Each structure stands twice: as C-alpha cells, then as structure tokens.
Length: 416
Ligand SMILES: [Zn+2]
Image (tube, rainbow, N blue to C red):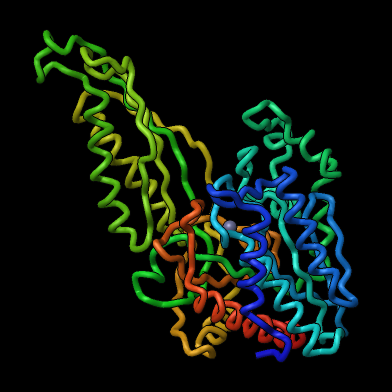
C-alpha cells in the first residue's frame, strides 16, 4: 500500500460530505442545483490542497484534477458526486473520494511527480435525476451524447436543461469539446458500490466488473376486442390482457435459458381499462439485459416468437416498438486481470460479475479508453435510497484494493 494512502480518511470525508449535503431523507446533490455546486466546491477545495494539482471544469461541466507525471500518458480515475433526490451516501461519491485519496497516496509516494500523469474526474450529472438524461457529462466527453434529444429536455418545473447548464457556466452547444480531455488517456478506473445483492449473497467484499449489460427496451402492444364482461362467453373473447399476461412467466424461462440475462416487464396498461370490459389493448414495457450481445439478441428473438405465439393462441394481434437499446460494453481484459490481482492482494477473493446498471465507465470504454471497474459490496443490495450502505471495513479494503489497481495500471501504461 502506498505510504500516504489513508482509507479511513475517505470514510471520514464521505461522512463530511453527507453532513454537508444530505437531509433527513438522504443525499440531495442533484446535478446542476446549488447543493451540487456546493458539493463540487467542497471537492475542489480538497483537490487544490495538493501542491501541483491543477483543477478545472471542462466544456460539459466535468471537474478534472491533474497531477502531471514524467509521462503525459494519463491514468484517469472517475466518479460522480451528484446523487438522486433522497439518495444514499456512497453512490458515485465513493468513487470520486477514493480517487482523491489515491491521488494523495500517489502524490506522497512519488513526491509530487509520478511516472505517469494521474487525473481524477468528477463527471457531471451521472444520475440524470432532474432532466432524465443519465451519463450527461461522460457521454458528452465520449461524443456519444444525442444532441437533438438532449437539447429539448426540461425538468418537472419546466426549466430547460440548456438554461440550467448556462447557470453553471456550460454552453450546451459546446459540451462535446469535453472530448479533448481524453487526449492522453491510457486507462480509466472506477470504484462503485455494487447496488445489487450478488457480493452480499456470496459474502465477498469486492468484485471485478466485466462490463455493463447491453439493453433492449421495447413496448409490446397486444390488440384484441373490447366486449361486455357479462354477455361475452369465455370462448368468444379476444382478450389482449390474456396474451400479455402469458408473457410474464415466459420471460422468466427466457432469462433462465440465457445464462446470466435479466428480463423485466415494468409496466402494463389496458384499454378501455374498465371493470366491465374485456381488454381491447394491452401495452407492456419490456426490458432485457445481457453482457453477451449474441445472448441478448437471442433473448429478444425468443420473446418476439413467444409474443406472436400467445397472440395467435388468443386471436389477437401484437406489435413491438423499440424504446431504447445499447450494446453490451466490455471492459479491458488486462485491467480485469489487474483488478482480480488487486483484490487478491488484500486477502479477499475476487469475483467477476457484470454490471446491470450503466456507469460513466461504460461511456469512457465506448470512447476507446481501456477501462476497468471494481465493485464493493452493498448492504441490503440497495441504492438510490437513504438506507444504501456498505460496511466500513469493506470501504477501507475497497480503497486499498483500488489503490493496488491504480499502481498496476500505471506500470501497465508505462509498458504499453
Ligand atoms: Zn453511481
């Protein structure tokens, strides 16, 4: 472990941040609000205490802190200090604050001049809680942001995203200039809470993330015929709900066969939606995720075939509309191996697992930067909630393992 590294300081700082920016309902650091700006100012003051560290905001509002090394090639460590409303004390800010601690450790170890340049980035608006656009800053940086779709976003009070950005000194039309920050990026690392129960159930503190799930999100509408619930015999009905309902157990079978995929019917609306009518139209929203692109395509195909089969059986029709999709994003195989080793060196057993949620790391990987990610166990398997928590001993070991990963990554960057 690097001499200057103090994982307990990270825990103390996370508590300090919580006391500054949370109320009785949880964290309130929603991006592009005064509370977020306050958290950012607090973060920046910590970074600027390190001699030789330069901090600035980029064109998309991402905060970068740079410690120049002998080589221009840069190791990036990222996180997000923004939270959802009533959020937890770790989601995103653990990543950022672990990055700050590792920067301190490297600064001390190399007397302010490490072999490679080390940069901590605090991404702007990972959560998308206010405007509904997740990964804002990182997608601007990767260049994958959809400008026309994002330009028209408003919050629930009708405030335009472009105006909220302006208040924080950001010109929406220029956000993709953020991409130049990646010029010398040789590796990107992120430490995040798992936000799920996998590590908890296996009683393991840390995991190596293989990548983020690909997602296929669709609306499926079954169309039958409205008919009186008293006068229509059961064998004469064209019941759209019956066909849709048959999809529910079927998606569990599809996910089960897929080895590692998940499927969710998240909503169901019926028309006419009255107690005295057979359902004419039934619309369900359907979300499928898998780390393997072929497996995801197969899951989608199987669901389509099942829907057509149930529609035919019930004498109704079915149509599919794609809402959104993204391909699986795989992390760098060298960094995956280093992550396993870094975890093992703390005495913990590494487990390789995919990430169900998307993260800023996925955007950086999409931009072509070799990316690695580590998970630390989440108690209750829950986040985006004030009960989100991780044992302090696990937070400590996470910062230590993550520092090991940073060390290995620097050696690897130099050898490339
Ligand atoms: Zn997060």
